[in-house]
Image 1: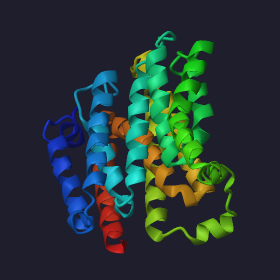
Image 2: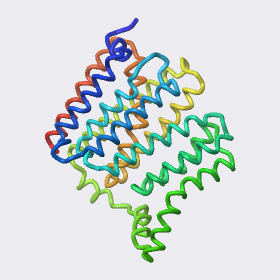
Image 3: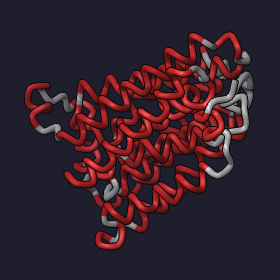
Image 4: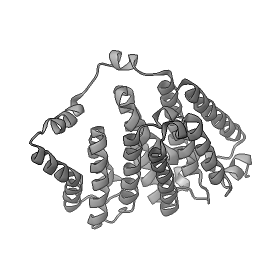
Length: 308
């Protein structure tokens, strides 16, 4: 039986409404005052890319735009990150890389797509070197979930990952100063003691992390309890989302000084999981939970708008 939550989730109106909602949140956060138009463009392109991900890989077995709607709602809870252009680009590059990698499912000879996916991951690492921490996990998931990793694919990924850095190194050779480059990679060894790192975590960041972790766990439990209803490909893709979101949330908890890039990536991978729960659950309790979740997300968004 379809409940109100299902009718909302499958409505064609929900995405335009949430797009308008997202724009309002950006305006309230100071879009015009701070001249955040490049950051808004990154956000808009990220939303469009999430729509393409949902459409291309049929992440939900019903016609719904809830993957991108969930992405908008969860991203808007982090209004204190709106001013970070580098964070917005990291998120956009990561989504594009995911789009390319997911398209290699059971296609080990799709070396071009693997190469370009890792070019975007390389660009992401230029802006946030912490992206490189996720590369071994992506290789593992390409082998186990996407079934597309071969020796040639691994080589293509390494070349793609290094490509942006080749051009950057030429500039440093011309400048004869490699200090910025070494400082950038030295950040990989920046393990701030948790007592000191947590002292710098704001209330808004705590709220966002707890909310995202709770929603992600709910989505994971729901999906894997009902995974028998999904196609094998869908289960494998959601396995990738499960591992990526869990690791990003764990890394954020262990090194909260890197909250900006890691939480953005966690939201990207958590959105399909949360959307699956909101769209395809249909009990009386989950119907109530749908509106409770919407209210909590709105409350966290308002609190962070006030705090920021």
